[in-house]
Amino acid sequence: MKDKNKVTHTETEIKQALTYIEIFEPADEKNCNGCGYDTCREFAQAMLDGKARPSQCSSLAKKVINKLKKKEKQLRDNLFFHQEIIDSIPIPMVYEEPNGAILGCNKSFEELVGSAKEKIKFTKIEDYTSNKKFIEILKSMNKSLLKNPGKQIVEIDLNTSKNEIRTIEFHRSTFSSRTGEINGFVSVFFDIHDRVKEKQELQKAKDLSELSSNLLKLMSSGFVIVDKDMKVIDSNNSFAKMIGEEAKLISEINPGLIGADISKLLSFSELFSQLLESGEKRISKDININNHLYKVSLFSIKKNTVVGAILKDLTDPEVNTEEIVERAESVIKENLETVQKIAYLLGENASKTENVLSSIINK
Ligand code: SF4
Image (cartoon, rainbow, N blue to C red; front, top):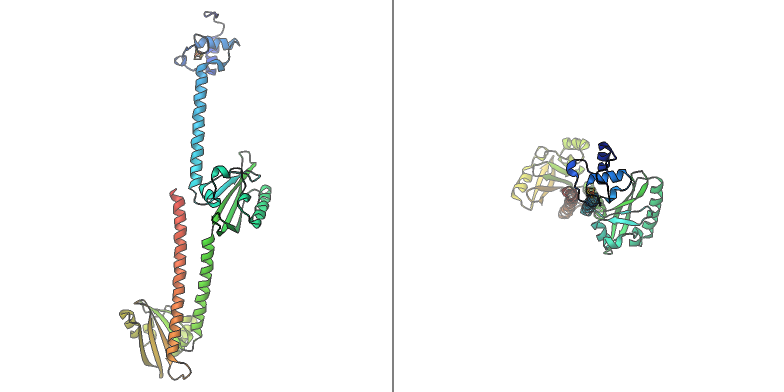
């Protein structure tokens, strides 16, 4: 049917035609007859004559199919990789079309709403909450973000799938196509419930600490708290007045005499070191300071670490010494417990933050 010996085209034209079917070297010419021609060159001539099309080359068709398969695998691998990354984020996130229809989400979001990805797709965030205020906020955010693309953040209380109310920091931002058009929204739900509660507890603890400290400062009896290095942690004005003019002057510049060396302030400071070393619960002694007789009651606040002392003017008939000591001890201990609680809360917060950061970094 073909005139095999007829050469109607130049070698350059044939070579050029062969490149259309991805034959660039003589070694690439398979001559498999898959196109109905005995050789690739005959097929090239037929193409040049307008009698054949590149798609008739079965070898080229196989190459194209293999390339498509390879590309499809790459796309699947890429999708899997991106989903894995999104799933590894320990914070619920979801991305939606501009009309709010959910395109995808991560595992944390599935847990938050108590549903699987496949069921979540094409639903809306509004479908998972009855919180009217949040729905209103969402609508207003969408409107505003579509007008001014970017990011917005709101803090709101939301019900979880476990029927718990949690304080959430809701972040919503737009994402765009390569041409810059808004393609949808990405939302992230940061659970800040524990942080908010801790902040409130911290504030309460601080207020309580201030209150008890102020109460001690108002007492007519002297009080002082000393650490294991014999440095003053706190004291009241009455204490400074009782122990002498110099201490009184220092307390005007340094209220509470904080950090002062107790051994330089008192002639009986050995009682503090004795209690700190022995870990005894209490020592009481009548001591003469500047021609005034005081009942000095020392007590251990934290064994071998912190000692407190109450100085009662024995010439003052109005106050019962034992009662003062007991009440002051109780307030001081409460004060220190509060301070310890604050330190614990701050430590726990730092540890939580570190854990979250580590979990993200280690992913
Ligand atoms: S099918 Fe393609 S490779 Fe096979 S002979 Fe025809 S042109 Fe050559």
